[in-house]
Image (cartoon, rainbow, N blue to C red; front, side, top):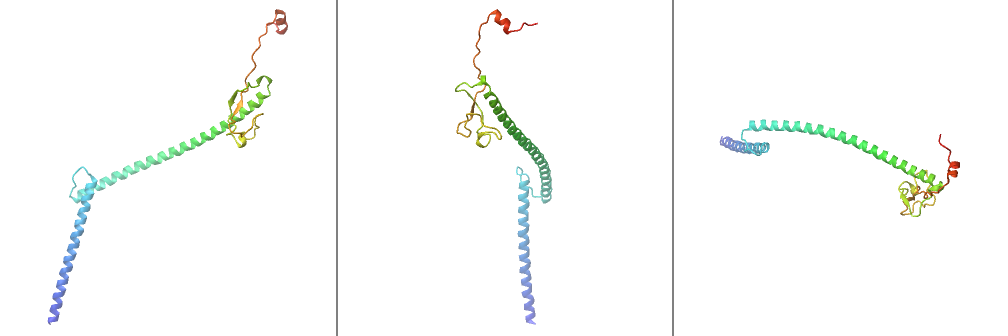
Length: 191
């Protein structure tokens, strides 16, 4: 019989120790939870002292979270509209760059045609040392625009050779005096 009594006492002591350990764990858990509520209260409104009422803390946290979600939705829609606007502007920009490149090619081609035309005109010989800029070196392989011949006398691709001769230098006008008879022969009378 004594053996059974000792067993009951041992079980009673173990049960008491287990209850004591459980209550200690529960107390530590409550303290940790309270600390987290206090930290949350301090985060919600740092300018005010932290609140200790858990229901108030949870209510304020819910309000702050819903406000932040609304702000996030507003900012997200603004970001999307700005991204669309940026995409549209990038397309316009690339289109303008393409137009600019086409205009530059047209300009180079027209300047080359003008040079070729003017070089065949006897009165348009360039004066020595006169030149105007012509970006042949940047136009294409070898400096000349694609499909165009280099102007006569120019070595395309030579470093520093980015100028063409001026084509519109005309010889000075010579004024000769004529007699009235010569005037009558050279010019028909106006009716």
